[in-house]
Amino acid sequence: MRRKLVAGNWKMHKNLTESQALITEIRGIVRDEFRKSQAEIVVCPTALALASAAKLVEGTDVQIGAQNIHEAIEGAFTGEWSAQMLSSISVTHAIIGHSERRQYFNETSKQCSLKIKSAVSEGITSLYCVGETLEERESEKHFEVIEDQLNEGLEGITADEMSNVVIAYEPVWAIGTGKTASSDQAQEVHAFIRAQVEKKYGKAISDTIRILYGGSVKPGNAGELFSQADIDGGLIGGASLKARDFFEIIQAAV
Ligand code: 13P
Image (cartoon, rainbow, N blue to C red):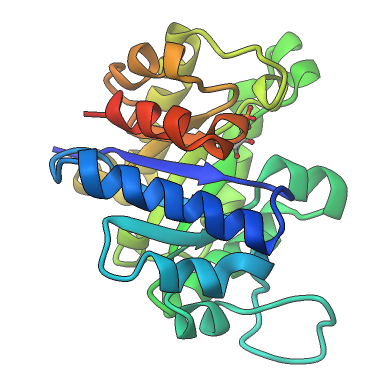
């Protein structure tokens, strides 16, 4: 069975003091109320808070992820950081190819494949994001768009390396809009993604890879989404900024 995973993407929210306070609050709730059988928990604060967050969760069931990485190990890339630097501060996960990175920073799926490769080489698990815009869905191009994002983003990633890859389906039209894909709509795309992974890597890998749903997940809709056969947890934006809401979502992922 696939263990569910719930990751919080804080995006560009919370300064260092606020980040430390929220991590401490999440850590406390997890320590008091979390049972091991429940979902794997990842929190992705801003880059500024990563080192401090990783220290605060040492020895707990909370893991820390970055929201992005550069594909090189080091070099003249002002404003960037590498997988090697993240692993040196015990960051275990990295979101790759979030639609906001694609939209505002022109990231391409090809670039994402290099980032995933780099993350994997440091033992960092990639949360690789795919998803269509509203226009693409309305013109019924969503399957085609997602297939391209998977083919290009996973190019050069070997079957062995796939054990360090999680896919996140985030329909762009559902991010921060309050509009969630219905559980049927989400399940349909998740099944499609799993079929694509099977085509490329075979059944053993497609059966074990985790596919998260992201886009306006809240305590009230998480249970129904996570009960779908191919939905293995969530990538949570807004609701992950409130410790109690985030934990309720984690509890929905049993
Ligand atoms: P919201 O949950 O705020 O819609 O954001 C989803 C998201 O982009 C997570 O990466």
